[in-house]
Length: 380
Ligand SMILES: [Fe+2]
Image (cartoon, rainbow, N blue to C red; front, top):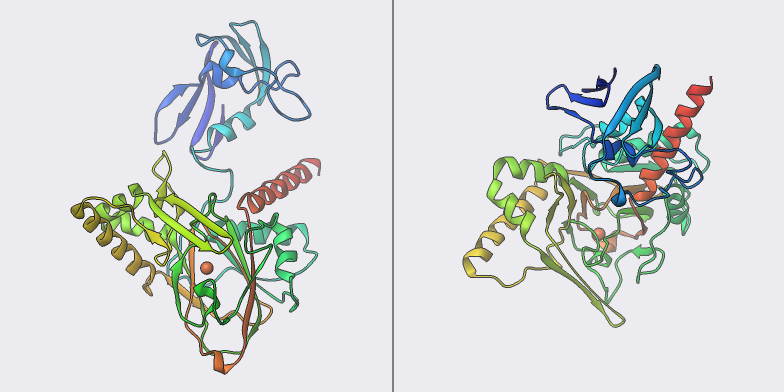
């Protein structure tokens, strides 16, 4: 029998592998669940880790006909289709312990405006493996990290982005400049305050991660703001269940249009997965267009949006900080909302460069670093 957190795996009988949760049910592992994880060369290509046969063709009445533990932590299974395979019990348990919808990454640490120690780090162009693991872990836990000491040069944001993933090129190019300009195509390029929003909800898929590098900030305003949308959604679920559910089931249309581009996508402001977990926040009240519905339905939606928006804008949930020259904030655009207080462009220049990467990048980096760390620990 082996254990992991609140889960244990044991041989229930000669033909039954049993999984048991401390706080939940005890059940036999389905034979097909095991069979489709066979790693022998007849079942899985050893180089790619991909299956050599379609598991949908397995016998739906497949049975385990023999189950033994020839050595500790090693299971040997014989199936009713005649196939035999070995399993690493710890590996099987680790996968069994992964809740649906989770990505084998650090648990999110939800935060509010009371967050005292912001995740900060001194940027280094050639970080050690431990530094990189620390940065990536904190980013995945808090949904953001603020670097200082990023070289104060154009396009440095791309160098930082390439440490964590691949730049997502959009119709704005590989990067975008945020400074006030006449005839701006986006309100970000004006000095007016920007309320909490997620970027580009009109894209499908939306950019997963945004990086913003401050090159110049000579203004006294223009504070950056962040809100943990998952924390606010959780609070809304507690305080106003009706508002939460309306926002989770109303697909809102988001639009962007310029002379060369017309982007339209629909998404619920609070996107929930099949397990009921909040997965993505799509919120940009300057760009959202709810489809027409009977007035009583729309009244409920507008009330729900107001409650959510006022929570997002409240000091209870919002943090504010000044991005100075050389600072760079990287944040999860599917979880966090960002904004900016207004500033007076007559005080001086304010210039940021930004770009996007996908969330896959930091998640992959985290897993690879952990795998290397485990391999190193095993070899010493
Ligand atoms: Fe933005």
